[in-house]
Length: 195
Ligand SMILES: [Zn+2]
Image 1 (cartoon, protein in one colour):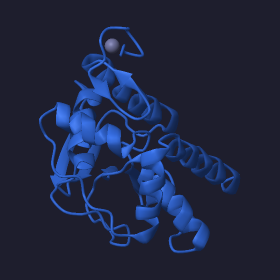
Image 2 (cartoon, rainbow, N blue to C red):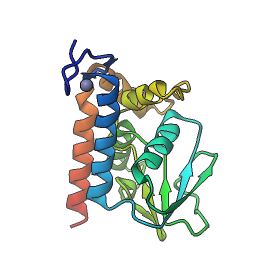
Image 3 (cartoon, helix red, strand yellow):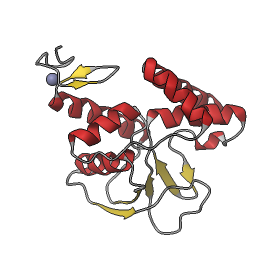
Image 4 (cartoon, rainbow, N blue to C red):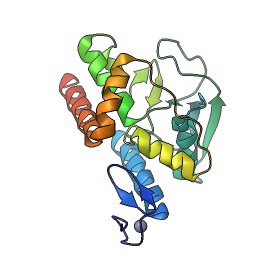
């Protein structure tokens, strides 16, 4: 099997693509960079708070954040706990990075349709004066787990308990493109509602 990008031997096998290790890192980072650019998520002198719940989403968020910000001036604080959207975050942070993935956004979309979760929390939303940044929104869970594994930071992927998540996860395992179609729908619905 050849890498989709450089045609060298592929070593990273994902349901949606096969590639070599350097290209995998490049593709993942490029997608996250595009998400940041299109949504104006990060800027110079940002004061960032990252929620680290011990998941692969959190550790990959941290790695990519540091790589993308590079030498830009910023501060990064890490709070070792789960992010609760209902809890108010006090402090002077301008951006709050939460562990996320494409599948979670699909769940959020379906939950907003059933009324279980407010749709204002779709995408990157404001919580008071703080911008909530779902840094890994354009990456699938499988891609994030692979990323963490290749960095030697892999922890056991969290078991899904929400029936909706289990349902989605089973479909996505067989048809990985579903998570991206859901993501696209979430963006479109958000765009229509905010007009
Ligand atoms: Zn390659």
